[in-house]
Image (cartoon, rainbow, N blue to C red; front, side, top):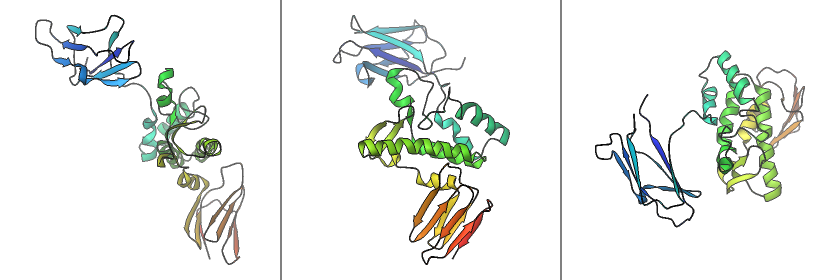
Length: 272
């Protein structure tokens, strides 16, 4: 097997407990290949962690010094097989062919046992530990934006609209309850996670307009494409320009009162 890094976890009963020294040997009769001292660890809940600098094809022995009687040390390999939301970025980049994209979307993104949730696509839903929930169930809007654009690229406009509706529901819920945006949102509860009023938690207006099929070019020009995928009419105003996007038609009203009604789903530019 290929050499791998090791994860050293120290669980302590007391927050002030001394961190042990750990010596890692590939060969039992030779000097240690790596020595982990007390100052090398990073803090985590109920203990500390350390990722080895070296990679190891095998281990002969591990020597632990200064470990408390009730404390434990766990040495494990790093698992890189866990699925996370970044695996959908090829959709945004247009890498997979149509068939592969449909499989990714249908079997992973839209599967409630994997990534489909009520408030957006979570970062790493396969992690089930309660203490990891703030990370695993976190909806990162910038990543969800890329996923939404990927859905549009492959013609999944209705699913992109559903994703926008899910994330917007979380944003609006927190604005109403806490009067704040949040850096991230819980995928199943919609509650805010992390920093208040972070830029990364702002409503994805750009994606919303792309899904809606409306591009404001100026106060006298607007591009329309497709139809409104949302189950409600949408009204957009911009410097006197008003766009009323219904289910079957779109009305564009300019600042001077002139209006144009468009029923064609083909891409078209409406201008004064």
